Image (cartoon, rainbow, N blue to C red; front, top):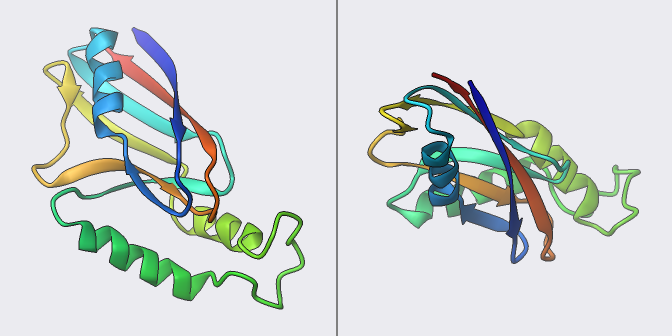
Amino acid sequence: MAHQTILEFPTRGRGTLDITREVARVVAAAGIEVGLAHVFVQHTSCSLLITENADPDVRRDLETIVARLARDGDRAYRHDAEGPDDMSAHARSMLTATGLSVPVGGGRLLLGTWQGIYLWEHRTSPHRRSVVVTVLGG
């Protein structure tokens, strides 16, 4: 059995947005007891992340790390059609993940105690992002 929903999320610009509850609602609505939830973001300048959900410093530190790896406005970038954060956002997306899989058991996401699912916006301005949640199982 399969169930699929597309969720829409407005972002405020660069940073993380906790989407765990919305994904969990899709899983619950799927009526699948045991299976897999696949979460995919349909964009090339944001990504998905499973990380610590208790201490926001973890997400801020991750932002610091990727900022060192993919700097805004680097003169070596050719692609800057949408501004100095354009190519760095694409690089950040490539360095992280656009799709995640989470096991489903008992009709719910089997995340660990301190895990959450986050949409990670890499652009500095707000955007509207589409996330496809596909639940497979029985």
